Image 1 (cartoon, rainbow, N blue to C red):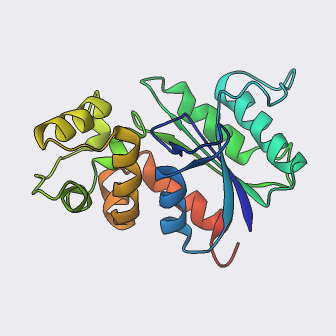
Image 2 (cartoon, rainbow, N blue to C red; image 1 turned 120 degrees about the vertical axis):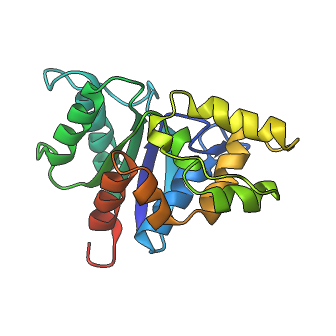
Length: 205
C-alpha cells in the first residue's frame, strides 16, 4: 500500500536530502495507528505545485479536495492529511466536510485537525517524552488546551539541555508514543483522526 501523507511542515516530518523527501512524526503516528505496512510520500499542504480546483468551496475543504485529487491522479491507494486548527474553528468543519465529500469518491482518505496544533500531540505521553529526553517528564494535562504547545516543547528541550531539534524530538516521541494515551489526552483532534486512519488503512480497509 502506498499512501500520500500531507502535513503543515517540519513539525510533522524531518526533511532529508531531497526537498520532497520527508520522514518522521506524522508517518510514525499513522503507522502506529493503522498497524499495517505501507510506503509513503510526505508533502506540505501549502505546496503550490498541486493544481487548484475552482468552484468547490473555501478554505481547507477546497484544499483537502485538491490534495485528494492529486493523490488519486498520482496513483496512491489513500491519502492522510492533518492540519492545525490554529484557533480557527471553521477548519474542523471544513475538514469534516471534505472527509465526507464524495466528489472524489475513489480515493480513501483520513483527514484530521490537530487542536490547537500538531505539537500538542507530542505532549500527550509523558512516558514517551521521558524516554526520548532521558529524564523524568511530569504529566502535562490537557495538551489540547495548551495555547502554545510548540513553545512548551521548546522549553522541554531547553530545560533538559537536549541537543535534539523540534522536528527530531517529534519524530523520536512519535516512535515511542502510546496511541491509546494520545486518544485519551487529545479527544477532540487526535481521537477522531485515529478512527479515520483505522477505517482507511486498517486490516479491514
